[in-house]
Length: 182
Length: 284
Image (cartoon, rainbow over the protein chains, first blue to last red):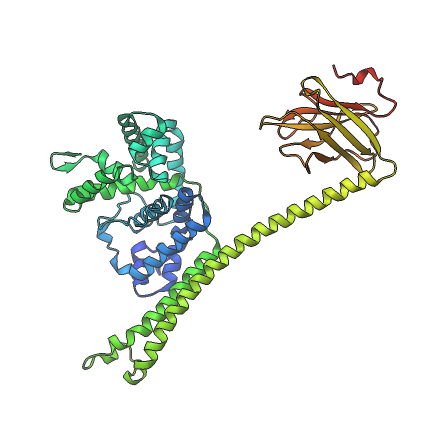
């Protein structure tokens, strides 16, 4: 599935982005094939609406096409930007915010390779294993925040737990999640 | 929030997860925009939070989305290229950027560029409408299937009621359902129809199940009533093996989805003509 360069190695995201900057439609097509599943699945999980998730997906790639020159490799990962931007847009839509929160210029640093479907599948297995082993209350706290857009205070109210407990659960869950990268 | 002059990692992680209240998020954002170290840690925290995407069940978007995207960028590209002519050709010796003659650019550009933009917009609107219509067609298709199903059931109902050799069996309520009653119309070739009245209300995890008690052997399920069953008002049709001879009919309360053999309490029971005195059909 990965687009191959002339020497056979997979083309990096930044190489594709440079070609997109030169209005190379094949490069956009390759980038779409690489990440559309992840972006769509994430937005669909948040919105529980395939049509709305597809709108976000298309708009994000259209934005990449139009503003590719604004992406700076020094500010992090393109895949990371896609995933976080998709999440932010979906949450804005879910909570009916009129202003969609975009990323600031600091970007996203992914400590893992997702430029091939094999790498994505490996990460899917690892993350699912970690999430499967988390205590239910920790997993719930993480998911409420990331997929429902709830603040820690809202999670505390929903679960009937003290704010400090919710923060501890989130911190513990994040520590477990980060071990995926070790 | 901050420890010394930097923001604690757990606060950055809460922010990355979207779990900070608005006011705290704004304060953190203000600090990060002027602090390289915190900005770097926030970018990492966002990457960690993005791992959660990999816990989600993976689906694929419809193939039409990519086709729409590519059509959209082509329209945008054409619009940009046409719009760019007058800008690129200005100045001494600068006209070679696009190689388009000046004379051609002026009026044609200003007509075609807006037209291309309009085309792009129309394409986008049409694709949106296309998806909406597809959803509507899908809903109507399901409604049509339900109507066909209802028609088949009605035909079956009429077939049973109209057959000359159909027999009638009166069912009486039992125990707490003493007020309930019913009438079964049974035809060994065409099927079985039950009209029931004053049945007690069921909890959501239960269904009524109709049984044919054959001349010999175990009761045979004739279908579910209530949740998961087929009904018009209080009239139900049921399926039984062809040419089965019945000596009685009964209705019991069973889990939703039904059982292979009766397990719950009898609600209605009635014997076919001539079998009313059969001791095996006593309600107790």
